[in-house]
Each structure stands twice: as structure tokens, then as C-alpha cells.
Length: 363
Image 1 (cartoon, rainbow, N blue to C red):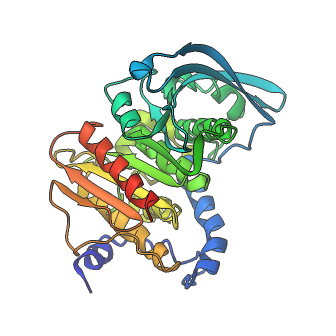
Image 2: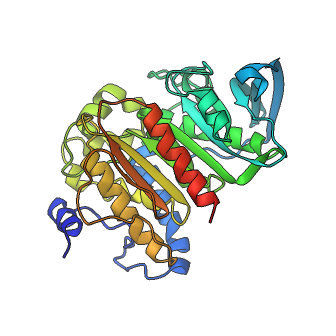
């Protein structure tokens, strides 16, 4: 037994490739059927149920800046309107698409602010690396608070919330899917190379979006920690008791019942990362971000890799050890990196993600 498998055994982490009835998933065909069970578990116990698709998605141009990035990539301020059960809701987002004769890879960035550029998104560097950008502020979708009558929450949340009604993370992920609906209408974007990305709570959101919508070829989580990319059992820093006490609205109500006994939870975060298979997954950590716990984030990447094996794809290629800072593991379909420093979405993180996508596009 290798080092990582010993850690998994010690922490008693549930196997995402074993069904509720105890059957081991042995091949890709069985995994595709098993995918629905994984989604069920995540919706029932952590995030709440993903809302249905809207009847209509309409996008309106509000303003255009043709000289953005010195004229290399016009910036458009847009308004996206969804119609769901006859009711409408709109939220703003921004697109930056480099001038090019080729179809371009793209990032959908779920951000903390609407600014473009932003301290968490150096847009000109992304443009210079050949990427289109679609960015929105999560608070413009529904506020990061306990109010479920605000924004899109009033359409997506029932009047009386049940144990499995969608939390705010699910709603923000749903909004990212609607931006993807718009991207599908654009001739300028390479639909085989669209990534959804976020940092911290929005890294959790990006993973949920990627897990529930296979149109995202890449799911990228930066420092997402507890209830995101980090395995819960045995982690350092934040746990279910803290996160559900202070930010319970991010999740379904049922999640809080595991606050005092995480071992009773019938799943862990490897169920989320496993759902990305066989597409591309990137997880980023920071050495000093012990609240998120880099080791537990790496463990979720390692455990997800077992699903890629079913497809004959190399997932996480590693040396059977916990990575040290300045490590980038990006040879397989799963990319993991850990850098020096604190909880932040840095230029270094973005460069790893851009390099990973460009490397996979060459194959």
C-alpha cells in the first residue's frame, strides 16, 4: 500500500467508486451509470438540488469598449436574462474576446467583484495568452447572505426551504451554466476548451458547476478548501461545524447535521472531484492556507484519479508523496499545484491554469 492509500485508510474516506449497495465500479460504462448516484449524494447531503434549465436565456449588449487591452480584445458589458417558470431575472457579466481568426479557449470566471480587470483576474495577461474571458460577480446573481428572496434565489428557492433545497453555491454554479449557454452561441469560442474557474467559496462553486455540467472541459478550483476540493475527514483548518454555522446558506440544510459527526456523512469531497472525470480537473493550493489544507486538497485530486483509470486515461501523475511548495503536477488529466504564500488568487495560479490548458490543447 502506498503513502496516499495509507492516508485514505487512516482517514476512513468513503470510496466514490463503490455504490451505495457496495458494488465496485470496474469500467467506464459502469461509471457513467454511477454518475447519477454521485450527483444524488452531493445534492442530498451537501449542496441541494441543481435547478432545472430555464425556458429562455437572452443576452443584451449594454456597453462596448473597443480599445480595451490596447485594442487587442474589445470588452463588452452584457446583461443576461433567464426565464424560469414564466418569471424573469437578469444579471450582468463581462466578455473580453481577443481579436483572432481562430476559435479561442475561454475562462468563465466566477468572481467576487464585477471589475475587469480585477486583482483576482489580470485580464490582459489572459488575453496575451490567447484566452477569452467571461466574468461575473457572484453577488449580482444572489447576495452572499441568508436572504433567499434576493436575486435569482427568489426564482430558484421554494417559499419554504426543505432539507435539500439548493444553497447559494448551487445557484452561483447555475448562473455559470447560463453564461455557458450564451458562449455556445458564439462562433469565436472553441467549445471544446471552456474552463470554469473560481477562488475560495467560488472555487467550490466552479467544482459544482463542472461536476453537474459536462460542457465545461476544465473545472478549476483555487484554494477552495472545506466543502470544495479538500477532503473533510481528517483535514486541518475549517470543518463542517464552522462553515455551516457562519455560512450555512451556501449549502442545503441537511449538511449541517454532520457538523458534530463528520464520520456519519456517507460521502466526502472526492465524490465531487471524481465527477469531473474524464474531463480536465485543476486544483490549486497555497502553502500557508492551512484553513483550506493543501494536503487534503491534494488527496481529493489523488482520489479522483482512480475514475480516470477506468477510461484508460492518466489522471494525476505524481511521486506518491505530499507535494512541496513550487510543485506543479500537470502531465495527466488532473493538474495539482501548491505555491508559497497565503489564501489568494495570484498571477502564479493563473499561469499554471493557462499552461495546463495550452498543454492539453496541443494533444
